[in-house]
Image 1 (cartoon, rainbow, N blue to C red):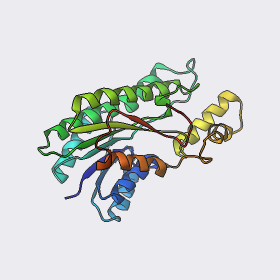
Image 2: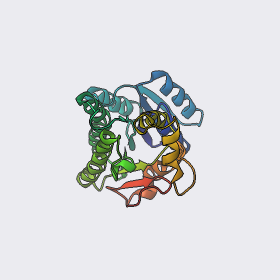
Image 3: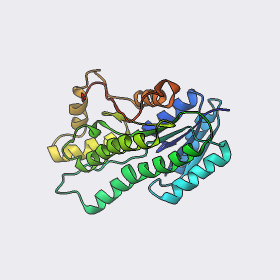
Length: 257
C-alpha cells in the first residue's frame, strides 16, 4: 500500500510542483485548492504517473473544510502519512496602507489554515496504530527569518509559521516530525503580483523589483517551484526521520541563518 500525502494550495506553482514530485516518489497524493478545475487537472497529472489521487476543493481556513478533507482521505486511503500545508497568500503594502481586513485575510490563510491542517492531521496521525514516523510539512519563507519592507503583514505570518513548527514538533514527537520549507524568490504568480506592487512603492518599472531581488542570488538564477519540491520530497521521506522542528531555507543563497 502506498503512502498518502495531502498538499494544500496544489492547483498551481509550488503546490503543484510538490504534488507531482511526491507522486513521482510513489505517494498517492490528495490535492486541495480553491480552484476546482486546477486541482482536477493536477489530479489527472498525478494519476498519469501511476499512483492514485483525489481532488478536494475548499478553503483551509475553515475548520469544517479541513475536518471533512481529512475524513474523506482516511475513508478512501485508510491513513495519512504526510500533510503539506502549502496554501498561502501575500499582501504587498506599506504598514500605513495595510488594513485590518488585510491582516485578517492573510492570517486566516497563512496561519489559521496552516494551524488547522497541522492540528487535525496530527490528531489523525497520532491515532494510526503503527510505528511509522509521519510528517507535517509547513510552508515558511525567507521571511520566516527576515522582515522585508512593504511585505510586513506577510513576513509576520511566516515568522509565526517558524514558531508554530517548533512548538508543534515538541508536542507530537517522536511519532510525527514537523518541519517547514522556506523558499526565497520563486518564479510564480505570487511574485508577479509582488513585483507589480513593490514597483509602485519604489517608483520602478514593472519587472525591476523582480530583477533587484533575484540579482543577488548566489546560484545565479531565480528559484523554480521544482527547487522547493526537492526539499519537500526529502522532508516527506524516511531520510528525514531524525529531523524535526526545523525551518529549512531553500533560497539559492539569499539568507543565512
